[in-house]
Every structure is written in C-alpha cells, then in structure tokens.
Length: 87
Image (cartoon, rainbow, N blue to C red; front, side):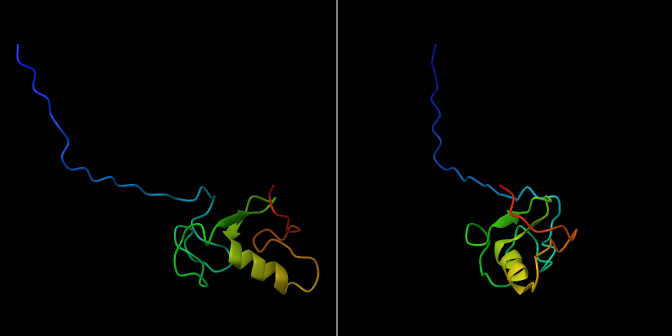
C-alpha cells in the first residue's frame, strides 16, 4: 500500500476584527467603530473604544474631548447619565 504525503506550499491567512459595541458608530463623531475617530489616521490600539457605566461606547479621544468640554459635571452624550468609565 502506497501512502501519499501532501505538503502545503502556499497559505494565505485572512482575519478581521470588530468591536463588540451595541452601536456601529460613535455617538459623538458619528464615525464607524471599525474605523477611527477624526483625530486618528489608523484604527486599532491607538484609537480604542471606551465604555461608560451606562454601557454606551465611544472612541477614547471623542469621549475625553466631550468630558473635558463640559463646564459642570460630565454626562453621557447618549443618555445624559453622569459619565463614569466602566470598570
């Protein structure tokens, strides 16, 4: 009995990633979560998503600008609850 051994000579792997958020776009800048905020050039680790205690997600840069622009206590731009970062 003859056994034929096959070798893989060429292999192309393909992968993709997505953020696990309730929405598909940032509620502040309206850019897609699989993209990046207007301040960044490339999506990924340099432009992460941040969730609040209310479970709304935003680009890190967008929510930091939002929180810093509030003259009084910062609120979530979506539900107006007091903004607290999710732990």
